Length: 293
Length: 212
Image (cartoon, rainbow over all chains, first blue to last red; front, side, top):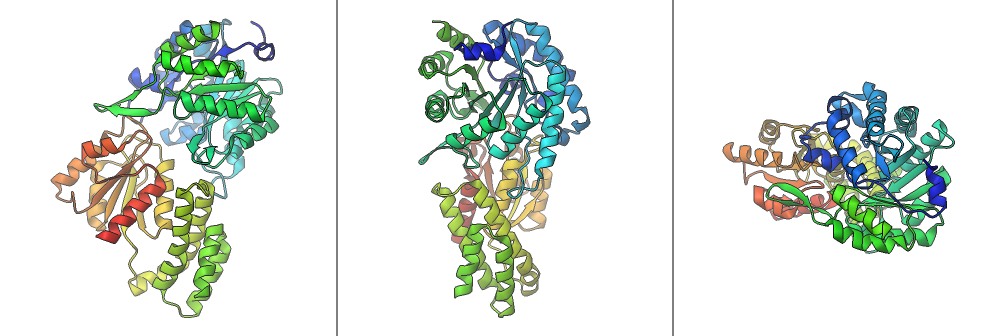
């Protein structure tokens, strides 16, 4: 398989996968369960979700390790098993895609707030990221995706931890922005321009945004990124904002709606397109079709 | 009085050391605890709340201001107990049973305390009985429920149902929040208030205790 970053540099548009978390809930994950323990206890379900994305046309699949730092696993009493939970996740993905798709190790926020705003020292968070990413890379991921970050300092810690483990591994790094009357900012007040600068300086290869509140805003976010950076971009949008209908959470953006709107990002261009909360293999199939059209 | 402005301004800047020094000075000058609290600390925090609401500042500034608020409160607290100075209200908070996500709830706690409420934080994964018992024992004004998971938000209704059977529903108000929660959902389950973010929770409860 051709090197991931070479393809990006050559101008290819690569379709990633959609949501893992909301798919796990569909598959029966219940309240208070740790999604990542399924990498050990319910491997067949994670395998099935990954396979459904692969078959829908994902060229990048993410590991089920969004909450895979020891810090995030600690409330479940699983912190000592962080390395194993992460390496098993990679093995599951590898069984599905072999070398027919790239596997990127998902790495989400630590759940802690850095000093002085919160109570956690940067060294603690850095060490947690390093442990997780070391396990992912040793188990053979093709890339690392640091995602859904809202604090730029924390995102940079994760990028640097990844760079310390490997000088070569491609790093994708994304933050989640809200729409405010003054423009797009993360809840911690990070602008798109600051995010672009900070993530690039820390050593990311592909930068952008994920989660958020739907494809329409995501297209605007992508355009704003394009205005402030020449770096390759990654965009993974939610299927809209979650709504509750009859006690069940639903996401309202259909695959067609998403693909149609996402087309505007192709021209920017955006190098990696995928989905976040509420997206399904059908969304990915629609995106792939749109990209290839 | 100048010292109140100084306290409020230092608090807005998030300068916790200066807030502590000024609060100490105000106490040494024999200014009433209630006045230091209302005209200094809470007045400053009100400006922070307004600035946040209008997107003039972001969460980090709020967190620093809240830390500065605590620095002042720590000095006032022993005297408040002695002089029986009332806080503006008492709120029991926690995340729903089965939910281990507590960042949102923690932020709400910080902001509530910052606004002058007494906060009893029951932590995460809290069973309904504990919410209700604590609210009863401590004579709370409100219970704040937080859920991040769509699967745990239904547990909010369990708390409200238990409040009804324990006959504190309506006496103790319920405010709910969290990513999957909406105003419609709040109405469905019979919660008194819905807050779309932490600061909104503070404003809502402030308005409630004021009008009460």
